[in-house]
Image (cartoon, rainbow, N blue to C red; front, top):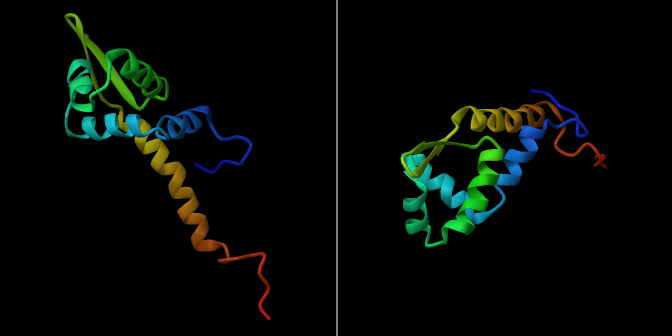
Length: 109
């Protein structure tokens, strides 16, 4: 997925922004194991539901998590296709590093 520095898709920007917070990383780490109810996330992370709701909203808007309601509880799980999109975006930089000189501004003496 080649992109120029000025045309990075919003989904990529939102994904990396969502991953820039330690609490949101904690949520992602917990959801790697299994789907969890918001109440379980609050307990394990020791945060209030209102604080966690803000972070879950950010993760959901970045398409990193899915939610489903069961009764009065909301359960969250990872949205793996979005992680694949972020991985593919980063892989392009790895590919470029293999074909570009190590330091194109540095001229050998």
